[in-house]
Image (tube, rainbow, N blue to C red; front, side, top):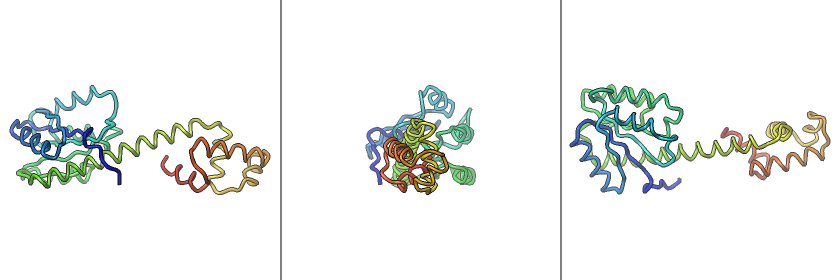
Amino acid sequence: MNTVPLAAARVFIVDDDAGVRDALGWLLRTRRLVSEPYDSADAFWAALQAWPDEPHDPACVLLDVRMPGLSGLALFERLLALPWFEALPVIFLSGHADVPTAVDAVKRGAFDFCEKPFSDNALVDRVEQALQRSHAVQQARRQRRELQDRVAGLTERERAVMQLVAAGLPNKLVADELQISVRTVEVHRAHVFEKMDVKSAVELVNRLRDL
């Protein structure tokens, strides 16, 4: 399991109650977690629009269900539509009356919900787990982009050889399929392995599964 770099992590607190924001900020500091408070869903959404890219450090959102203006649930709908939504787990903060709504949101992709008044330790434990999820998703996305770049760096012939090798064909059959010599297949195969940073056909297949 990868260690989450908590020093770089951010917890976005989106709640219209200043007392709740302050209490949560203090609580997170007791676990050495940095938070950023927002007094409305509108304010957080506006800040998010200014981000240059998806988050590259672990992050999560503590989101109140009910707020004036854009509600927490409406903000969640917008976040849900982002292509990197999973990299920013959402934990809803709900009053008793909002529990069914929060449960439904969890079924649709929210990380969890905590009912007010919440248990301090239980909430921060879930925050740390959400940050761990964020870190894992971001790493997987980086690895996939790197893999896509490696594939893009292959020549057309190398990609053709790679596909046949990954399908389990020996060099002789690859040569027959592409109507080239076995020696040429061996050269292309070596280039594919080098560019894809693998040492065997099995390792190549396993890497391609991540595409």
